[in-house]
Length: 103
Image 1 (cartoon, rainbow, N blue to C red):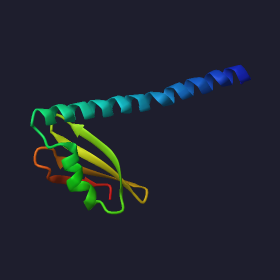
Image 2: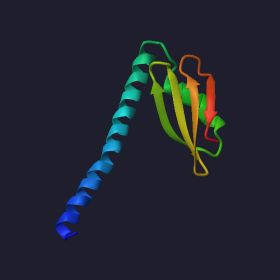
Image 3: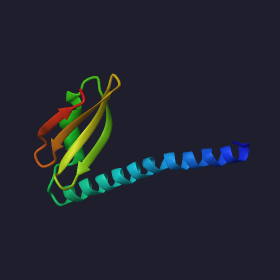
């Protein structure tokens, strides 16, 4: 393959590789907006309260962030410990931990 063709291929691959990160960023913004709207409406606890209850229990793990499912009002908090991703599902209404996986 000539150099010009290789440059086009690299540019295309880079563009395609960037698409998932853009989609993930948009999804995170939507999660944050949905969580805020539900909190303002009084349907769920504030994220800070959920984090206050869960993060201290995850000793030795780095908190990565959260997702929020507006349909079920479940927060999924994500952690990293020793190269393993751990997901903790929390009921947004009560703050009760529903499940934990990946540990």
